[in-house]
Amino acid sequence: MATVCFEGRSVTVADGEKILACCEEMGVPFGCQDGLCGTCIVTVPKGSDNLAPRNDKEVDMDLDEGQRLACQCVIVSGEVHIVAA
Image 1: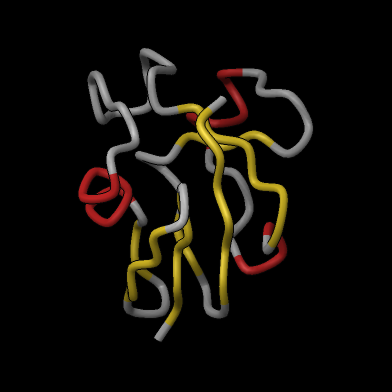
Image 2: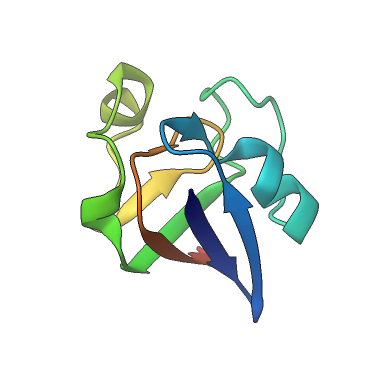
């Protein structure tokens, strides 16, 4: 099991799952949930190596280093800390 941490809260997620549901539960803002609007951009200050590589939608968004789309991220394992961008 993996863990996503946001604003002092932690939620356990199955390895290999998208983090969208747990981020939504913890209060990360979402819009389209399809990687098109950028509302859910988060910064990953710790644990980015525990996430799967950026998918095409994240690459197309041209995010800054350390930023990800919470609606598209897949956690491989371990612990990931996110901060709203």
